[in-house]
Amino acid sequence: MKTILVTGGAGFIGSNFIHLMIQKYVDYKIINVDTLTYAGNLENLKNIEKHENYNFIKANICDKVKIDDIFSKYSIDYVVNFAAESHVDRSIVNPEIFLITNIIGTQVLLDVAKNHWKKEPHNKYNIEYRNDVKFLHVSTDEVYGALGKTGKFVETMPLMPNSPYSASKASADLIVRAYHETFGMPINITRCSNNYGPYQFPEKLIPLMINNCLNNKSLPIYGDGLQVRDWLHVSDHCEAIDCVLHNGDNGEIYNIGGNNEKTNIEIIKLIINTVGKSEKLITYIKDRPGHDRRYAIDNSKITTQLGWKPKFSFEVGIMDTIQWYLNNNHWITNIVNGDYREYYEKIYK
Ligand code: NAD
Ligand code: TYD
Image 1 (spheres, protein in one colour):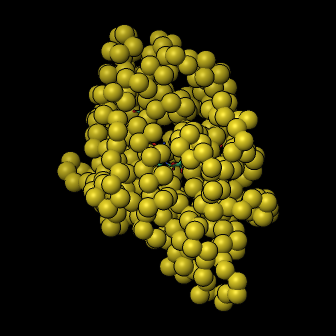
Image 2 (cartoon, helix red, strand yellow):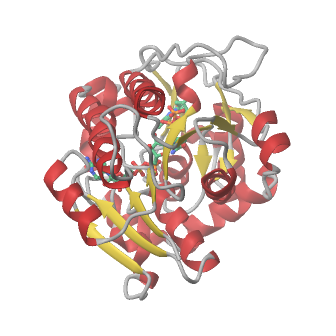
Image 3 (cartoon, protein in one colour):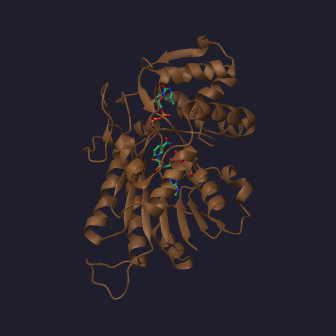
């Protein structure tokens, strides 16, 4: 029996992770803490909301008193920290909230976990922890910055984030690492490439393009569309997090990726052709400032040391995903009818 505090569990990856954990570990309890920003959607968890092993608590990870109460009420064994502001374009328009949630929020979680997980008696710095606890911080390959035409990100590379989003994620990684080095906190950090799959907020490339195709709206490509992303199905990412949570060596960082490099234009044309629309919908617009040219993950550490490997080929995963959005059109239209669109459309005119 383990109790896992999942932060940001109403978002895209967090909700997929909760579905996986509830199904896979019948004796685990999941506490989902989410403040429900524009990106948090409890619809994603509708079919498990009454499950006996699942609890939702609306709370902000920056609220130390509330997070402390949650740790006191439930005996938390693991923290899996997904909660974040996650969209690069929004970080360009309004960086501040990215620093607050992604950095301060992470530090609050670390501090509260440290206080609840230490063994008594302890001294202030040489802290001994319960040996069955872990703080897993979910990070991104974007902390490494951008690659040229060749090479892949490895865990030992220096961090060179280019957007306010990736800079806030890199800062969070460093504070998690510092809690390990200074206070001996049991941690792992995972750095994954771009995810695709069900329940992704339709401001991100794949769901945005699918939705725009369905509504015969233009498909905005930033710059020349030849930027490269390394795509991984969200369920493979969630399995990798589960693997690191249970088997990752204390203090280690693991890259997660599936060797699926695609240009943005390739992705968009694939969607257009699958949905049966015309390439005339494509509109080239002004490039994103500081736009990273290429990401690619070297996943050899997690595959060789922990035995994880992705199950989805990109060809199957992307077809399943497009089909999911076609079958669940109500999910996306409920969101799109909300306030995000106007906001988004103002960004790159
Ligand atoms: P998302 O934007 O879909 O979900 C984020 C969730 O966090 C939302 O439910 C939101 O309500 C919640 N949240 C935001 N601020 C909060 C706060 N202060 N307190 C509590 N909850 C808060 O994001 P996602 O795509 O699911 O990403 C989850 C994590 O994975 C993020 O940390 C992101 O950096 C990382 N990541 C994402 C990708 C990707 O391709 N989407 C790739 C690698 C890593
Ligand atoms: P995005 O889904 O925002 O993820 P990230 O910026 O974290 O990689 O964007 C993926 C790629 O698609 C990125 O190179 C920017 C590009 N893009 C467009 O060309 N048009 C769009 O409308 C969006 C949202 C993204």
